[in-house]
Image (cartoon, rainbow over all chains, first blue to last red; front, side, top):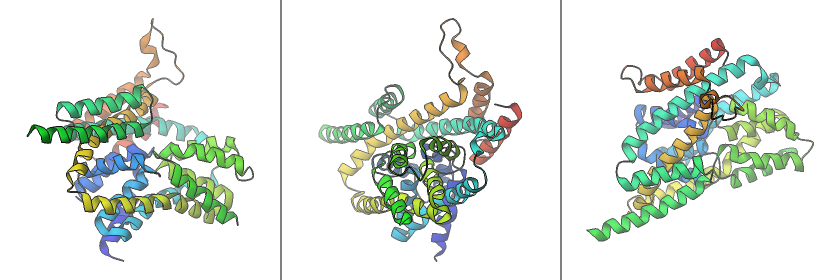
Amino acid sequence: MGKDLWALVVSFFKIGIMTFGGGYAMLPMLQRELVENKKWVTEEEILNYFAIGQCTPGVIAVNTATFVGYKIRKIPGAIFATVGVVLPSVIIITVIAAILSNFAHIPVVQHAFAGIRIAVSALIVASVIKLIKTNVKNLPQIIIAVAAFILVAVLGQNPVFAVIGAAVAGLCLGKWGERKK
Amino acid sequence: MTYLLIFWEFFKTGLFAVGGGLATLPFLTQMSQTHPDWFTTEMLTDMIAVSESTPGPIGVNMATYVGFTVAGVPGAIIATCSLVLPSLIIITIIAGMLEKYTNNKYVQWVFSGLRPAVTGLIAAAGYSVIKLSIMVPDAVFNWKAPWAIFDWKCVLIFAVFVVLTQLKWTKKLHPIIFIAAAAVLGIVLGL
């Protein structure tokens, strides 16, 4: 097994074990491990992967792992990164399911998790601030970002609509920008 | 035979649950109805709670949990593998195409629209977690005391953590340090 395949498994194992809540809660870990430490992908690429992961089937965390793995080492990379990201779940959940039937009802677990949720919220805020600095700079981008937020957070619509709408908006803006030149 | 059934049910879930995480939930509810001997809908509530309070993607956690409940460790492994298999196939194909067309101007235009949108979507996800973590559960908004819907201890901790992630000295700290500190605070303060 190649050294980089092993590195993929280790990195995604770390990301999997430190993600509480799944999906976008994984973003702070991805930024730290893949963008800043390993420099395997850029922040823009992670956002591209999230956009595709949002409208393709499957768990977003897994989709992102597969994407990054493929970029580093094609198909073997995709498989090893995916194994890495699911391995902590398989181990931890199996142990909990085997010995504790009422794990989630233990008061200490509930208190700890109430705290963890706060930290996850703050970490997502920090990630969003970082993303805004790099990806939301001009007026059309601000409008798209705010519209996506309102559509999902306020109106409670399916995120897939936001993704499709933004893709169309991106195409129109590109065409328009080209014609202006 | 059970193993094959588990494979089939979770492969379907992985193939059709779009949007990740809790999108698998309707499929699991249906599974508990088609296979009443596997698990009950009440057990599902417990499984969600455990999946949300342990590390790892929620969808994967749920698959492992259900698989283990139905057929022990082999069941857990089969359920998880079959859940991720459709992703692995579909994303590998898309990643291959993306690599080929990455310099295509139309592809670049599409992504230039998608990136701010995803930023907005992540903010929306953050907003729902924030609501969950700093508001009093089941509180009703009251015009005479609009502040009563907030749990002020949690609001304060949240504010401190946000500031810490922005300060020059503390922002380089590993995210897991914030999470561990918050877990301890939660236990000590009985949040």
